[in-house]
Length: 209
Ligand code: PRP
Ligand code: URA
Image 1 (tube, rainbow, N blue to C red):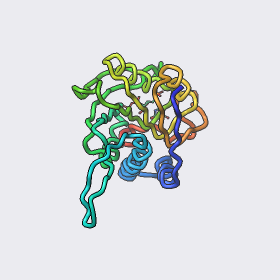
Image 2: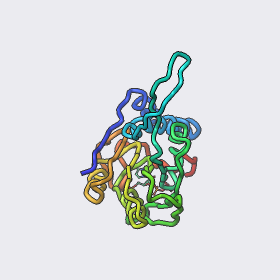
Image 3: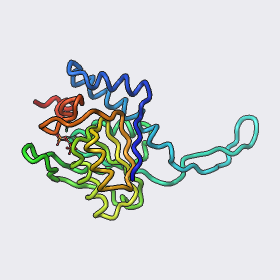
């Protein structure tokens, strides 16, 4: 089963509380999501392999470590996942970015795919699927399915807030995918919203509705 990591650093929890707050405006919401994405990227890249390289310091010759040539790809799920991309790119500027467009059908809550555009070498990269919300898990599973159908094998999932239901669905469908979240919330409500959650991530990010 894929590992579930809750990134519970105090700074992440502090910022997440302001993200949840319904009185936080769109500008602040966007900035806070960006900041939390940066902090979470630190945790996500903990196992990125290092390569020993020689380095000449002002004092002597030494051996240092740099991140090895293994490449990363960020795959935001549109729309809301877009809000986390820049925060991650601050730490990993050479990552390529692919996009998967999905929305939850309002009646069935089933994911509807409308756009896929991946880096040409996506199959060789470690891919991080990004979406602030893991609710029923339908969107995350559909995005991971899409990547696997195209031959991608190394996939992680990064979300801000998850419901236990969504985590279980992804872990069952994709046991090879590790999940990184900032908070594991209580449950889903009757409309498939995460409780306590933050409301509709896309609407709060882009000021729609
Ligand atoms: C939200 C969210 C996830 C999805 C999560 O997107 O950003 O993609 O719902 O729900 P699930 O786990 O039950 O699938 P939404 O469908 O509202 O689309 P949007 O980002 O375009 O607003
Ligand atoms: N999508 C959201 O944006 N919020 C939720 O709580 C659930 C799905």
